[in-house]
Image: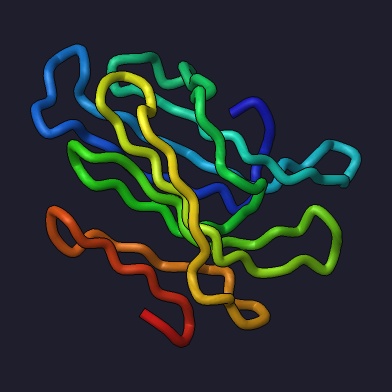
Length: 147
């Protein structure tokens, strides 16, 4: 990565029919970039490491999170896309939990469709969100009190 990041989420995305040229992508989203002078800034960047690239071949995606944040839950659904849910927005201390959900649906090598919506407003300190795929069409999002 170009800088150290705190709370960066990641998920492995695989197409339904992988080929040698398109085997999968490790996708990183958001985080808090820590500067060498002890400061920080939030990022909305999404970075991609393709399995066919060298290990230092991270590329910046053409899409971003709707709001710069850290500690989101991340999940992928093979052949469909990826989702980043919840997180913590701390551009200014002390920060606040986020109920945002960003989804990116793939049709080719780029994100074709993007959407964002709000989950139920999180309570204070509910920012480590868990996300898991249940089946081909359903994902569950959980914080410390809800599923």
